[in-house]
Each structure stands twice: as C-alpha cells, then as structure tokens.
Amino acid sequence: MTTLRFHIAPNAKVDSVVGEYGAVIEIKLRAPAVDGKANTALRSFLSKELKTAERQIVLERGHKSRNKIIRIDGLRDEEVLSRLRLAE
Image (cartoon, rainbow, N blue to C red):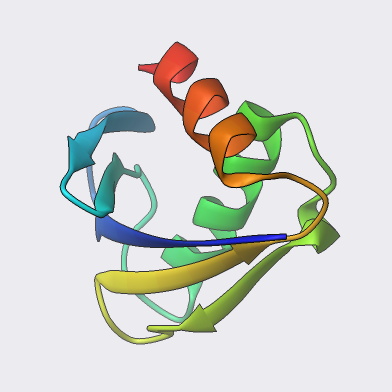
C-alpha cells in the first residue's frame, strides 16, 4: 500500500502526468472539476497508467480540492513512481 500526494489540473487538453515537484505529483486531466468528474477521471487514469484495478485506488483526502491524497493498494511507492514516470 502506498499513499501519495497529487495536484490535479482539470480541463486540460490531454490526460497526462506533468511531473514530480517535491513530494507532489502533478497530473493534468481533461475532465472538468464539476460533480466529482475529475475525481472519477483521476481514478480511471491512475488505474490505466499503473495497470491496476480502479478499486485499488482510494481518494483519502481532497474530494473538493486540486490537492489530493491517494492511497494505492497492492503497489509499493517505488513501483507507482516508476510506472508514472514511464507515462510522462
């Protein structure tokens, strides 16, 4: 299990991992920040990039914020970071 901090930029042209800034990973998403659409898109995007089930990605904090804390079950920190760096 791993817990990471993310900064989300909604309404982007493409879904992508922008980079890692200190302890925060920045991700751009096409989904708007309305009615939880960006949160759903984030879980789906991370599931695809990490090659894991969407149910293993849990939004711990930041449901209505761009800054989020995500728990990823079944993967270690190193695995998550290496898979996201490949997605850049």
